[in-house]
Length: 149
Image (tube, rainbow, N blue to C red):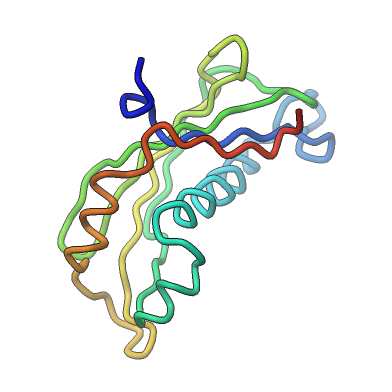
């Protein structure tokens, strides 16, 4: 598999406080995981988030669905893999897979849909051509790791 065939990947370690009484990652934490992974993805695509804001553009979540496949536990290293989904006129969807680093076990999947807004108007706005192109291309083969060495 070449780097261009690989999705954007973000690695992180499950912390103790993210686990519930059953000793697995609490389901609501996956929304946090999606948000953290998406921030790294957006930073990779567009540079500092301020770059979007300087263009009077921002993104707002309008939908997040998560499907759980297998448990993750304290100190596991997970890898979020992000691929582009549907690109609409004012909104876009990204697909995330959370897999165990090392064994590749699918832990969860999520689809998140954002609407592009113009903060000065607090109204949705069409996705500009340059941003659409960046979303279509994505960040294949890029790996960001917060999991340590």
